[in-house]
Length: 324
Image (cartoon, rainbow, N blue to C red; front, side, top):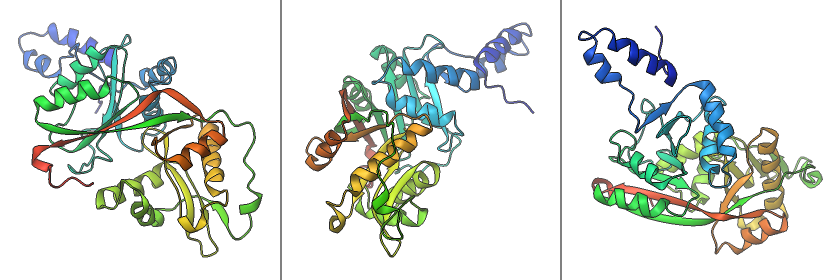
């Protein structure tokens, strides 16, 4: 059995089917490629897309991170939707439809967006098969019109939209490893997170505290780089993880272990790890998180000209069930 996913081959199949009318008509209708939406599954074209997105930094960073993960094993079962190829005007990454989903899990049900023409993005939103409007989900991006356009389409479908906006940052390339001499002894110790640590992260994350977040964090730890400092009992006291869009997130130090330099060490070590794998060293920070903003300034992070926007969209049917 052969699954035909390459766009050019699908177009060739469409032409071949035309030569077998009328017997092939129902198959042609079923598999017809439209100009409004394209699922990009061809390996070579996904690698090309990764290169093309680089020329649109920083606005394309979220989609770029997702595409990099797709091209490196696709641990989060993502796929790419475009309006056209190769001259695309909008691109969305989403969860594969065959992947197991929880309709309340807006952490995993996440879309990343980049567009050259906002009208093309709206066109994709309005396509019937691009977004699953029947579940709670999120949309992420680094462009100013993302919220207005998404909210307009969501309102027509009676979904509530909650916006969170952050400073977007990127760390400069690191030429040397951070000094780990203070945490290379038996206690404290610099190491990685384990899935057994997921409950602690769920309880300490401002966005967490529910079963969907616990499952999401467990998957992140399993799939992507993480760094933590452990105390003499082996418990994490400071950490940071990487999400499905190759973004450093949930950087946290337990209150009793602050002012020891752990946050700086964890941040730089994770950034260096991402750099060694070819990933961008991107992150987000709330404007009023003064301690984190000062830390980022102290390591000469670049505060990007664009902002990071996260939209959580909730159908009316789930308005009382969605996790906070």
